[in-house]
Length: 435
Image 1 (tube, rainbow, N blue to C red):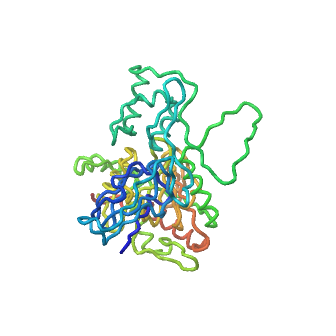
Image 2: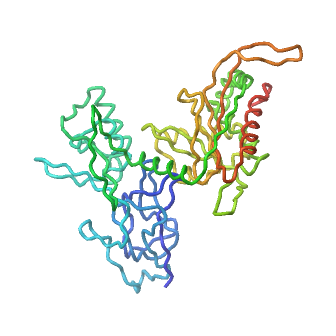
Image 3: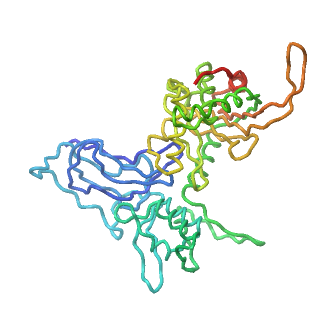
């Protein structure tokens, strides 16, 4: 008997667990390679998990609605099973909630929402993303129950709840007044945290699952890598004027809006080729230099949280290709349509803090990468301009850049040199560049 273990896939570098939404197969069912076995969800991406082998599912280790850590075995497949004669023993179906059968429990279980009262209790399952939106928008238990779901088995999707919120704001629906709002299930840990009392006029707000994941990932990154941040300033006047001149024709020809992001990525890629150690990771005492240049770009979600979709092989794309990839991934992120592979395998990250009005920032490294570059807001300022005829003062478009890097691998000399090289690439932008 050859047993293949199906594990919970990694859905992104900052995601360490996922919720099982629905099993498409049960123990005893035959499955083909790449056939969907189950649906899973995180606060960022909903996805289907395909089978990695053909055979008979002999064991299902977790229930629907369970939260499972990445890399955990969730099912086993017998590749030698003869389903026509049913020679292989059939394991019992996935247990019910009252009959747990897995030996190591996940960090916590995302239980269905339960609403007490005269109407009884609810057993509907809501994805973490839906719960997050409901919590932020003040949607009550009773109101959430009334939203018709367009997803699988009537499940309420992000689109459904956002439509409800929009209709409520327009007065098309009347929300029930209930004392309880949607809250996320707390993380159950071995050492329970004692209740605290807070003095003064305060409001207590529970972190949603996505914010907990981000918080844990940021703390882990700071504990893993000794961070150093270097700063540089770039005169991007030529780039700004060039974009203003060509963006209209570019959009007409390509059907895409030309933002600054692909221009930044283009400059970063050129410099990574000159300083390949920036595009690496650390495995114990081994430095793994990545030959692929996959640029992650921090993108804001409708909830206000960030996700980092990745532009694969950015070094082989021209400006048109980069623009299409940037816009496609950004739109998919905003619509919650990113696929798991869209957030994987990044080797360097760009974050645009200028989008939110910041002049500069000190970004935290997106592990296991060794560097992350932040670009600030582009501002007009009077600066000294050096010319062969002497110095003069002019109004220029200026931008700050900052890069945090892992001091275990990247020394100050390399980090500062790389950052200065990116700034010079932007300053020396070819104002006669063709599109």
